[in-house]
Image 1: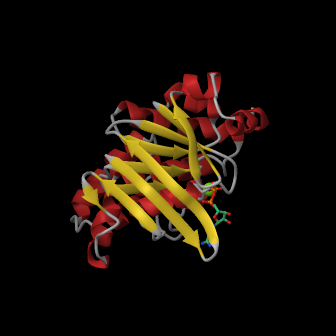
Image 2 (image 1 turned 60 degrees about the vertical axis):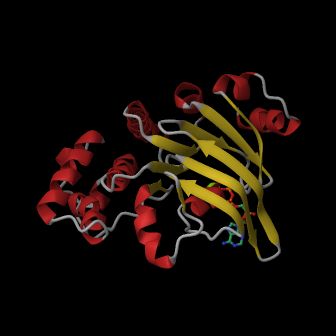
Image 3 (image 1 turned 30 degrees about the horizontal axis):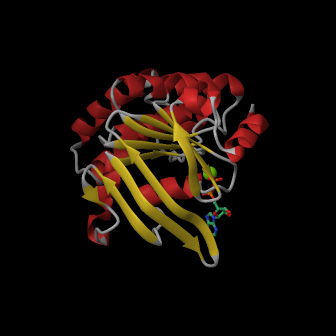
Length: 241
Ligand code: ADP
Ligand code: MG
């Protein structure tokens, strides 16, 4: 469903991604871990071309998204849902309007159709009763679940999560992880950058360890957490756990 092939990214003189290869099959949840500055966010951002790769290729659902023109970029972005650490909801719009907006603008859905889909998605994240609320009236965990509903409403092929719970108070983290787990059970293809190692152990099909712009090691949660091979991974795990 998602294939990253020899991806490189330089910012000026800084070589951030040196040569990243990553394959994510349909329905897989791939967890990405690694020290701060190792290039995790840059890699995710390249996957929907929020960053332009310096070289390499990215395939989404059998389409080479690194080749497509500006013109097709918006259509391509719809295939790749993204959820960030900050929720980026529109503060002056109700929860419902937030989940409807891109459906109407980008997918050209009618308002009733977009509203029905929005209510379905809000129901899925347990927030149908907050449809009329403004974002500021919600907790951080609820806002993040609205952001997930908004991304899902566009029928993405892949969902990318960049530290979705890092900005949340500890007691709100669980509700967001539960929604992600449900999504996985529903068969969504997901790439998750996160420090929630417990969640990785429970929910990930595969864990990828990045360091210094490379994928240093990858394997099942049992392999990565139970029998790390490289010194860099061992040292990372001893620091985070
Ligand atoms: P991570 O998400 O693993 O913490 P990032 O992908 O955010 O890592 O960053 C990797 C490296 O790329 C860091 O050294 C960061 O300073 C650098 N970097 C990220 N974005 C930019 C940018 N727009 N311009 C210059 N350097 C950047
Ligand atoms: Mg990051």
